[in-house]
Image (cartoon, rainbow, N blue to C red):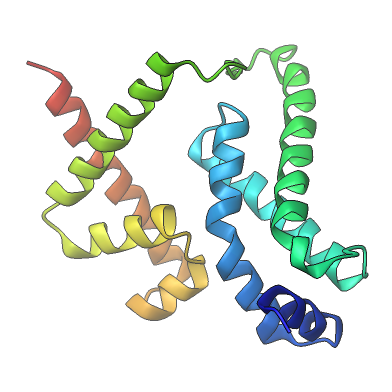
Length: 183
């Protein structure tokens, strides 16, 4: 029996560990899809990714997935649909004075190069952080896609401490990036 089929069968039988494995395995790919589907900020992308994961678990639990081996494609389509719904909701925000960022529908080479340069700048700034815990928490949460609870457990942090540490680490990265951009 293939990996996804076995995992879906375990989820259908109520195995919570299997659900955790599914989320850990597919969450990074979902985040990538969400980030590529629209110009969402990190926080919005994380929220949408969580929404996709929740809908995916509900769909798997309820047996909506006909072919378990096509779980990845099902999750990708679900992520696409959630992003489309989010983009439809976005214009409503502009009517109350909140600016929105609209994604460029064509992924042109200059935009791809720009994104790679931005990614390189962020990664360089993360590596330049002097506090190892900052590097650890940013890499675990934003790059590997580890859950907040896992990181808190691994680093012996409370959720409140996690929020403060990650906020400060993001601010340090932001300052390093701005410092490197200014001559």
